[in-house]
Image (cartoon, rainbow, N blue to C red; front, side):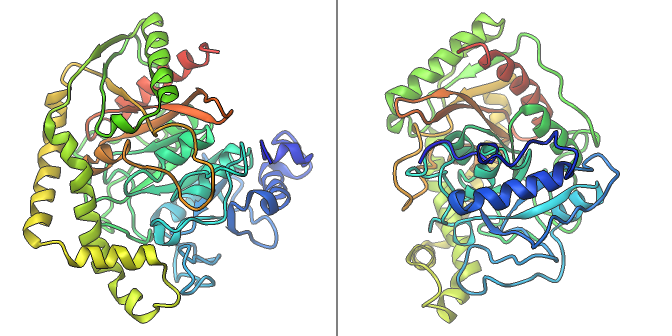
Length: 430
């Protein structure tokens, strides 16, 4: 099966005034979900949250590790899939406050770790949509919702966005409060966004970026978060560093060639692109991120694995076991590297507006038993740097390929401006 889209099912479009945009999105979701399997929960009817506010009439998909008080939040787990939280997550409350509607809960891997959910890639159902935010990427790619929430602890927003051919944004660490988002690793978890264009991402980020005492980790420095509702303006003639990131040897020739074509197009559009060699410490991030995740994941999930051995996966059990074998010295050293690189990255890329790299090793792999390699996302997640994946073409199997743009921590508005420039440029590549 290829090209699973809601509009292909004959449901209608957002211009249908009979149902309204939320009603249309709901009908699309109901019709397409048997094939796409992207929603873990849909309510019995569309539940429009409000008729006023900047998000009024907007249907949003919410990853099923993000708490909703009026819908089950099962965390992709077999422990209690019908669990209904006592309250909304901070980001869900914010969506409702601004008039947006939570259309339904999108499929996640178990506790946002490695056990895949049921969702298929909308471009070809034999291929993974990526993970852990598989459902959110798929519902945006299928045309069901214009915006969906995901989370990223290694590569769970950027990689699914690339595989499904949509825009995926992982803001700076701490930019969007995580209260009510089930943790996988306190030092690495980010709330992220999926949309079909950069303008929607920029608007949503402007509305959601905040420092809140309910989530004290990683608050942005004063003045770096945009004013509420601010839009991004395309950068003029940006300077972009081109790198060969850690795990570059895993990137297939088609993905490498697409990056090079994108670089040529950006240069032709007026950008200045220059190769920059990475310090060796960036390569260490591939090990350091797993050290931090395993230690913190063990503390979060050890009790669940012990209590529910028949309802937790081998992947989760292995995470706990691996975390138990890591010394405090190794964990502290990894956190020190994280702090150092978060500061040093701005100096390492002084004079550049963004960094050009790739979001994945290539097209989405065939099969639904794994979600793909997140290594191309790992350094920027570890550092907490903002990153965005933009669709840029297709590979030999007809599946999407993208590019990834990155900037130092706290420079989200700068990155979104370069992304808007790049998006316009990539549209001319053909």
